[in-house]
Image (cartoon, rainbow, N blue to C red):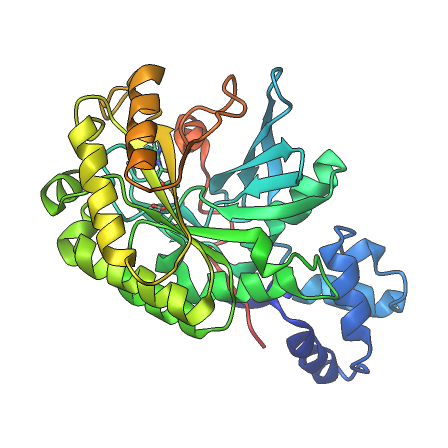
Amino acid sequence: MTEKIDIYSLLPEELERYFLSLGEPKYRAKQTFTRLHKGGGIDSLSSLPKALRERLKEKIIDTLPTVEEKLVSKIDGTVKYLFRLFDGSVIESVLMKYQHGNTICISSQVGCYMGCKFCASTIGGKVRDLYPSELLGQIIMAEADSGERISNIVMMGIGEPLDNFDNVIKFLRLVNHPDGLNIGYRHISLSTCGIVPGIYKLSEVDIPITLSISLHASTDEKRSAIMPINNKWKIEELLRACVDYYKVTGRRISFEYTLISGQNDSISDADGLAAILNGAFRNTGAPIHVNLIRVNEVKETGFKRGDTDSVNSFRDRLEKRGITATVRRRLGSDVNAACGQLRRSRMGDENSTVNNDIKVIASF
Ligand code: SAH
């Protein structure tokens, strides 16, 4: 087994220690960090002596994803990337262009362990966690490929970010670093299916990102039927963790609610949702927000999408009960099949045997 340094996963202070271990001055760390994060690759490190660059190339593993396939929306320019990772796995990222800046939706794992019944990403289970460098790499490569600067990140792609907690936290520190991409925590949101201990841990690390909760139902019975995680942590515990997150961080919480025709999209479901949110957040002053999404149909799951009238009535009912709600605008509808479906269509081509004898060192 050969050990290789995952250089894109290292924070500047770790890079300093790494350069010192090579007998090099630590001032090389900052310039290296900045160059790599701006997408230049090792060959762009022209300020390093050539011999050192060659030495580095032998010692490191380049974990940046490569563009395997790219679909560009003819309607609004949304770009869906299928990225290939160093071990042959594939993941998806989506680059969306808004008036207030470019937003990227990134994956956090190869596959997903959570088993939500309507979701394509979880069908084959979880293959592995992404390294911090691979989380960051989706942004570096999307910027390099598109020539666009990315200002907002949503962690809503394949995988459950709080099931890859340590690597996600390290990624957040990397992407926020002033010598690197320098994306503010307020421009980042993380979506979770409801891993309650992870929410408490997140509130303690002093990384004030926006938390987004995939709620999708207002009773435990209905939620457990579509989201197995709810058997472990019930809605009440989940909402208590959200209130705590708000109290500690002061950050607003948003709730994702995917409308599935005939299952959770009736007016009484809207009343139920308003009741639990109003109940949990009463007297806290927390700004909360509900995002309504019509389910993307996935052929393996059989869940059906309702019409626009039903989603509008649902939103109006929430508003009437004092809950701010918006219907998620559907960007890239011609390329944006449900998250995870593009990957699934390419999974047969995966070749995960290539680098199995390499041990990846992602901290130093
Ligand atoms: N694991 C995290 C983040 C990834 S999923 C989470 O559960 O929040 C991102 C969002 O897409 C979640 O709200 C998820 O429930 C939703 N989603 C998954 N499959 C969907 C589908 N087929 N249609 C609509 N939304 C879906």
